[in-house]
View (cartoon, helix red, strand yellow):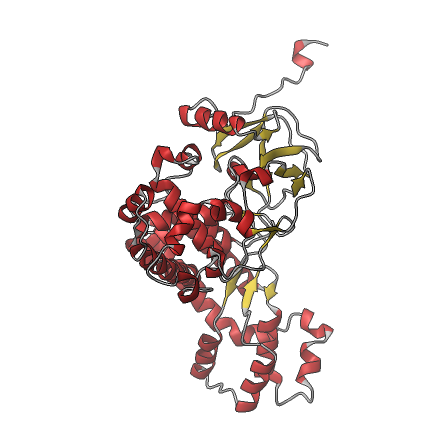
Length: 457
């Protein structure tokens, strides 16, 4: 066959560069190998144009292959905290009765963040120093957005950030009070008292928030009798962990994976009073992929199906073409809008709405009105003209498009779309554009897209 008849293969430009040989990552890989982490040899670290640092496969990976296997003692989890007697002494050797006074007052994520702050304060003396040095120095969540831009950000984003600030400030104040009343004389605790401040805790909180994975150790340890343990402080469960290297694999909604706690010998129901590292020597945490990854492609895992409001505010990235996105509406605002149109809800209507929870989960997504939003508008429109509104709401008719209902809410939808557009015009012209701001802008454009699709229907 002549050369002119051959189809030449076009080389695709690389969208990544390898970073395994960077000094800090050489140290990390060496430390992980020394501590017996086992990883698929097809994996290496790389920096990608679209996602930043992630994991590349050098050769094709088949579904069912193990990606990483970490000894339990090489993960930061509830047992790590409980076995650190010096850290626990912050609470137990204290002028305050911490386990009583602060019972059920913080989340386990907050306790993990406090512990990560403590480990960071130790510098090179910490066993976890190399891992901590490789954690991001900054996190791209709107929590850290400058005030200049915040005033133009969508209210849904700001609402999440406001709740985050309340939780972080409340838990920081508790830990600061506990640390201040501690009577331990060890050098680690003394240096930690000087080191601990809000900015350190905020960094640690989002290190845990953005990088933790689900890990259930209830089959191994007994967490029922916790009255005399610092676990008595938490108000939720302990089923999260920080896993070195695994936390560098990025998210894709199309990824499918499975995690396993591998127990090589009969280890179960260990009392939290009897925890020792050697008891966990034969326990590891493993993750398998259910996908096929071609050579030189990025390896992904799935953090769970999530809309972009959660991805942007909790993890710091935006996922294009996310069908789970929606624009929420507040019931009180909708009532206020109806009032401007001389539509006043009667006591009977409000009672019906509340009893059927039609004042909650009011949103528009790419498919249209949510079930509750549709039901609410039905109550407004047909409550007194239909003999059985309940039957009408929960019938198949709910699935059809009622233009009368769409028209009823259309003015406030138009207002919301226009307000977001006005904010976007300001944000687009700000001089300093960061990853955080770009993520918020992308989400707000998605909101406009959803609302405009509804308007055109």
